[in-house]
Length: 331
Image 1 (cartoon, rainbow, N blue to C red):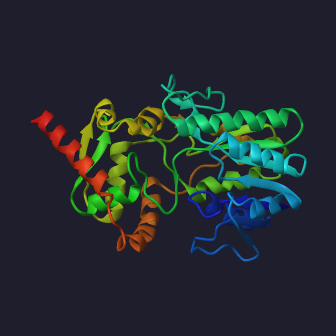
Image 2: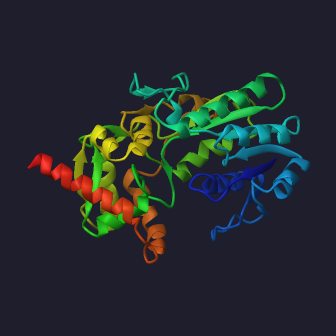
Image 3: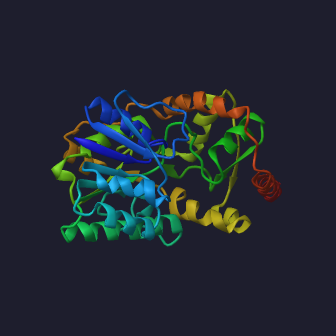
């Protein structure tokens, strides 16, 4: 089975390539070649840029059983892929996002039947538009489509809420405050990429996956944000200084935080993965790595980046301002 990964060096796709190689997939990877990580033996690397019509267009000249598209974020990109791959591939897998599910949340447990409607985050809204486009092509018989919706999935990076995850790690190691939305007890799911890859790779070439959407996350398991940040601190050998701030107050300081907070990480969520488990035959599947084990694996990657890390001064100053304001409220 010839499988093309567009992307292939990110948090999720890299792990999926390794799992696919273990299953015997004939894998090609298309990206710009900026990663220093190596691919499994036998994986073919194609260097190019999605924004370069010459290099990207050549992909449409080859025959692929499966195309896994990790790098589409807007309608224009989606239409370009439809034009290039329609009628030429056995399965087109679009990586969407579980953040598209209904917000505000009306139920704790999320299934694939939960409506896709997120009024808070343009990122999610754009992915929803792409989903509708691709499913329309599938229903018209032009492009066999599978949609996969990851939630918060990590491999080299710590989980984060607002700002980059390396910034939170840097602040923890400096003994500085870590902003936590609300009281830190809202439930969230964190999935390690190696666990995500197990069902993902088994959706490829799978007739049961055609015309379907699946999320892949921890199955019926969530953590509080307090627990998530404490596990992160433990992996770094420090006890983080958590400062709890109402979400509305955070958004007043920076309006752009409304998307990732109201539109993703503030509501309590727990995902039911029964659909993907049944489609892949992994009826007893569950994530092998605990929350803490996933964090511990990130540390090795973070240490490689730590020496050259330069904090975003604007973000750093803003977090300190929010901290001072919140401490004043609590005084």
